[in-house]
Image (cartoon, rainbow, N blue to C red; front, side, top):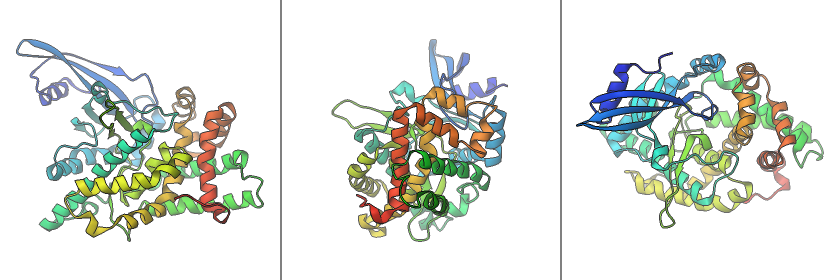
Length: 409
């Protein structure tokens, strides 16, 4: 399979300011599961300009080249098509209203099923360790970037409204919805949560525990699905919806400077409440103790950053109390979404590759059952078991037996 033609390589070099291409190579990234739904490569182009030879280091995302099931699955879901439209159309328009993006890597070349970006790892950005949760400085950097990203939607809609043009939803509705064909993946993950709780929850001996989680958890996931629609009671933005560690790059500056975060992979974007992003970001990447201690501070910081970066008056639209209320409402999405993702994220790279990057079992663990895989990993790995059980038990405390617990936020 030819990834990029010679003409395309020439165009990429020209876009980067070079007229002569001497050679180019692709390198597969060593972590085959770095991007769950797509292949990722390094592109190195040797160029010459005015007699000086140098190298361009770029990052490439493309459709899976060897996993037939994932390739067909992505085609069915339309994820690459969605991200292509975001990168080639909507996000470019964002830049027209707000200037160069501070929330994602620069796009160098975009076509239907191949995206080429600057390689931010060369600039000091690194993915957080997927088996660890984030420090306060790291999660604060992500919250700042999230607020800037959301401000782009407010800036776009404020300018478009002034000009009498259509809203984001009116223009991109077909791309900013959850595909119905992805429901099997969600149902399989939900069922894995239920079965895991029956084995490891510290509340499993409570009276009617099994009956309660069997009946209540499916309703919680239905509520989360409803929240993925445009809100009728709060303002809507383009939300990333998938802010786990492999979709985040963080540059840790020196002691006197704050860290900075960039987000990648926009194939699951939606148009809905911004608190879907904030609640899931926090639930994906913090411990229960950290959530209890940091959430109020992070909400205040998000609101202040959004107010600073939006061209419209956020204070006239909603105050911090309204934002906190919306966050509490969206916590059911944040926790249930984290419960789908975290059991995959928190396992070792080797175990994840064995389970999710295997042609023979991809379809089963994604659309039939993955309960036993999670239970087996939890039995083998105490750190994994602790992190996943803590997250799942928070769902139990908040929504299954809420009268028995006092929740900090």
